[in-house]
Length: 322
Image (tube, rainbow, N blue to C red; front, side, top):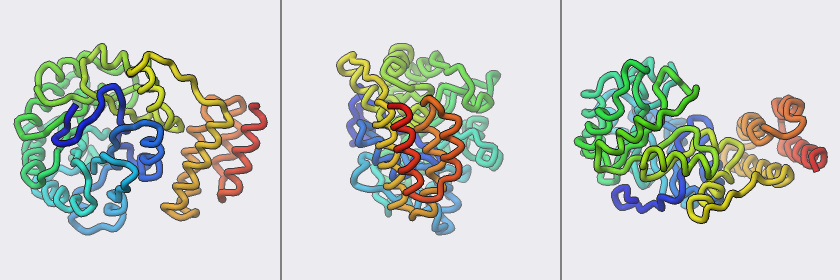
């Protein structure tokens, strides 16, 4: 499958953009486990044009995580175009436009999924960004604003007309947030309605769910979001099943803890221990999920204040579950 000049193996999956989660440390780790494409955390177009330092930090991409897209959000075509040009300083392989974020803070200001309610504006934004940069431009949407307004097909067709090279569809409406079910029928309709690649997203958690998504939608590629939280090895599981129909089991607890420590150490290397450990608490909770005694361990993870404490907790969990 091609996104402009980017070639992706359809029997693999990429990492979806997730604010506050899909930072460089996590993206690199997912690539090591087989993710063949990653998207940055979403960045405010207004923040970029105002030279906000935090916005720029979100766009830093390493050579260990290629190909990688920079994701931007906003509701003003010219500001979005300007921010897309600003992204080029960080050498992304593509620009992804966020038109799916359901967060009240984003949608309430007219960005993210709110653009699903204004298809004409959405198309203007996409065209402005496409005209502003020479690298591939993709768009991430939801099936619609709510069950009464399912318009992913129209948005996808407008995106194609505006020059987008691919469309990612999260199979839920904005009003669903992350509640089940995932609407594979609408993703399939989008696939039939456009000639550009369609990427599916939503509740892909292993090889079987990945194969089911492809079978039900006919999509060209997959992006994994929450299914990778505390489970970066999910990309290896997906690839093993799609390529060889092999079901890889979950790693033993000791291996999960080893990966957790590796992840958090890298996070601290990039952001400093103070910030890294604070962010480590939520990651630790995801790595611990489903382990015997998880409730107690999560409580301990919530008070972590150093790498040493993290290593002690990981060792204790490994021994207790050996």
